[in-house]
Every structure is written in structure tokens, then in C-alpha cells.
Image 1 (cartoon, rainbow, N blue to C red):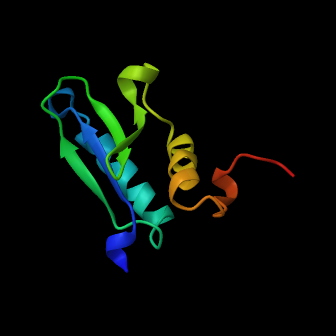
Image 2: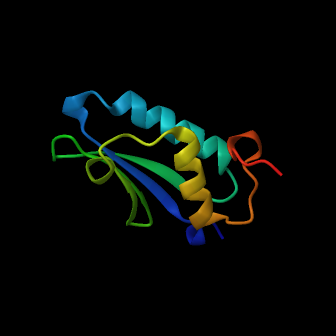
Length: 97
């Protein structure tokens, strides 16, 4: 049932011009986790400088805490570890056997 799948939200600062960055990340996450997530919500923030990624309301990445934006590879690994730990990310994994 789709309602049981997690929802990812990306809260971004529209005044900082981060909507396109957010949309790109949303596209990458939806492509990678098509079957694992309900959707990705882009949420304009009222707080300047915000760029926060949440899964079902729980913060998994906050630009202000980290002092940087997530790399897409890193963000996919963070999301995967929560929504589908057994999923292989293939070349995005960055691990060698």
C-alpha cells in the first residue's frame, strides 16, 4: 500500500535560489527509489539558508548542521539506509569488494 511508503521532503530557501538544486535532488531520489518511496516533496522554507532533507518528518540531512550541501551519492546512501537498507545502489555505492 503506497500510504505506508515513506515520504521524503526537501525544505529549501527560495530566496537563496536553491529550488533547482532541490528539484535535481528530488529527480535523482525518485529515479533511484521509485518503488521504495511514496514521493518527494519540495517545500519552500520561510527560514533563510535552509536546506533540510527529511524522511517522514525526521531530519536526515541539514545543511546548517553540516556546513555544506549533500553530495547526491551521499544523499542516496542516507535515504537508502532508512527506506531500503538491502537495496544496492550499484555504481553510486562507492564500495569495492
